[in-house]
Image 1 (spheres, rainbow over the protein chains, first blue to last red):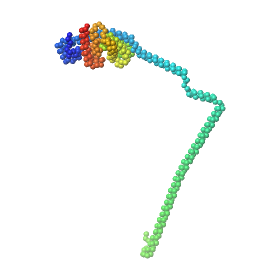
Image 2 (image 1 turned 90 degrees about the horizontal axis):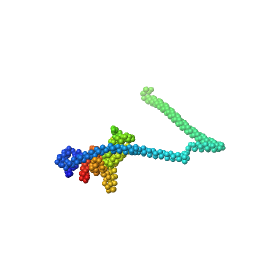
Image 3 (image 1 turned 30 degrees about the vertical axis):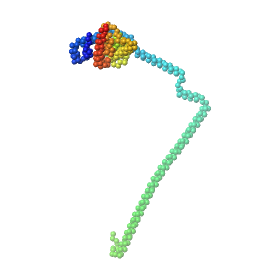
Image 4 (image 1 turned 135 degrees about the horizontal axis):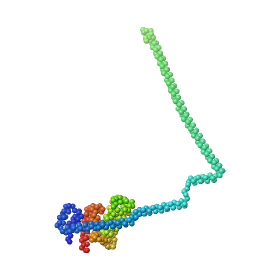
Length: 242
Length: 175
């Protein structure tokens, strides 16, 4: 058996696969018509393909039995995936429960072996009760006396302070009052001075008017005397014309 | 037949509905098995890997955000499991100086020669070959599920069928 033409081998395989376009396929068919070995090669490839497809069908025919086998195996191990999560969860749950138990035991042991936390308020009340109960009447009296003394001292100190504050306040009020009083006095004095100045000015005006009137009279009298003197010397009327 | 969508079945499976996951197995097991067969090259290993993939899918189903993607998701699990198995066996084979155990086919009735030849392909060629021919997937679907281009898939398929042909011819000559 001779082999196919080496330069046609790929084209024949592609042709068997249906991978050639129409033009390539037509060119190959022309060659195949003239080349027995290439034609035989194509025929064997096609038979090989058919055999492979038949093998596939045989595999498929056996598939049902294999599927059932696999499904059977899955039934057996099916719990594995389904169980895997619960197993993991169960393991976690067991760990969580164990952790809670350990923590709980630790807390209980701790409570039993360590003193309880100090209650400050309760402790304070207990101490006060105990101290009061332990005080004797004499001590109580001394204590009351001391307390009274301290209260009185505090009140005295407070009284002195209040007095000092009152004095300071009175002083301040007096200072303000004096300032206001002085301010009012000055105002009245100014007003009186102004009135006085005005009176003086009025008196001066009156004097000037009197002087002016007097001068006018003097001037008039002097004119008449000059005129009579002139008339004596000239032919003038005896009285001055108005 | 359960007419619920994959999404509904996934949600039900998350709630612990065992029948719902069994229905998902019926719908997708064959694709998963063929992907395993494509990587591992023999039916026996593929069965084990497919079963592991379905179990792992069940265990992790709560992690699947879009239930409608269950098919592609579980196939990815199957492919990764199978590839890991191949790599482990290749490493073991290198250690003991042995041939790949994964490429040692198990005798089946019918297409034994073809199965042996397929098993001798490198797994990166075998996987698209099995998905395309045995599983009947389109080139676009294979490209999407393998995250390669359609031209890349065609290239792998072309190489795969040529190599498979050569292996079959060699096997025929030696048998």
